[in-house]
Amino acid sequence: MSDVPMPPDVLAQILSWLPVSSLLRFRSVSKSFRALIDSDYVISHHYNNSVQSNSSVNLIFGGDRSLHYLNLDTSDKYANVVNKIHNPLYFAIFETVILGSCNGVVCLCTTEPDNEIAFWNPVVRKFKKTRLSPAKCLEGVGRGVCVKGFGYDHVRDDFKVVRLVQYVGLFKELVYSKIEVFSLKTEAWRETGDFNYHVCNRRYLNVYVNGCLHWLVSEKAEVKDELMIAAFDLTTEAVRFVPKPEFVNEKAQVNLGILGGCLCMVCNYPKVNVDIWVMKRYGVKDSWSKLISTEDVKIIRELDMLRPIVYSKNGREVLLEKNFERLYWYHLEDKTAKRFKVAGMPRLFVTEMFTGSLVQVKLGNASRKVANKDKNDNENRKKKDDFLSKGFRLVLIGNNFKRNHIQRC
Image 1 (cartoon, rainbow, N blue to C red):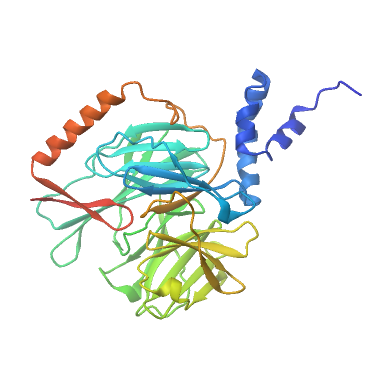
Image 2: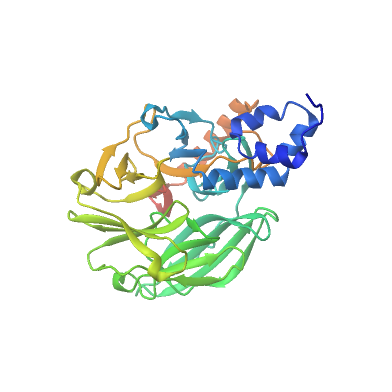
């Protein structure tokens, strides 16, 4: 047999099709192997191959401070087990919120006034952690809303956090509405300008598709029949509008989602049925198609919030999250729903799907034991006691476990 070594480009192609767990082990073979696996070529091709083949699909379940992890790549999706995974923000004072994921990186943050944030690859177990500056606070101008989102600027190769801060006056007019962008590369905020639209649905807002974050908005507060889909481009940092599907929305409860990399819209007609629309070609109005329309009592009974999560491996089923407490596999041909129960799942949770990748966000290791754990526990407990002793109460709203506002007791 010939002892001629394999060309590096051929070897890189082979490596880009292997599971992340195998590649992490192969990094220990030699320095040249490690350099090849850590190269931008292998990392980008490996991620693209995983997305195209719908492989390396993982779920993160968030709730309170605990995080749980589930891999859906096993042959029997009902034989999976949920495992608890170390939370990079475990020692924070307040609850952990999953802002979203892209390119295999999950963004975590804590509720205000803590504002700690982590850019984290759960598979590689590397993260970068920093603290955000607080959102602008206006006294005596009415109700304030702070919405955060997470995405990726593919031109500058930069992960970004977007913050939309709005204050509404006594007559529901916009007093203050600004979009701010935090760059991981520069670790600094910059203001992009005014946003003259009311955010209509604050319960699940991190819908990152095609390089943009999407929000349901209207020109007037609480006007459902004038809903629009606003898209904030993370590269140009400009706002544009995406056409919505044609549907009767007088009684519908509407929210946005993402499924298979496509923008989708969920229309819930309480106690009647629920429809899920998918935009197959981004930005093209005629490409909206109704993927699911069901009257299944298991889905619509006591339905408050429904989110599509991911397609099954064969593409015949869709995983749905209902009311942040149950998962269902919905069969697209049979139009039936089957409860998805997995050992170890938390009672209440927010589900985030991410594709396993080799993207390494440095500065930290989620698997490393913290030597000064006791010291951190005591310091955090003291901070929390000091904060609560001032007579403040945290009001947590909906699935994001976000701080809606701070009130004096």
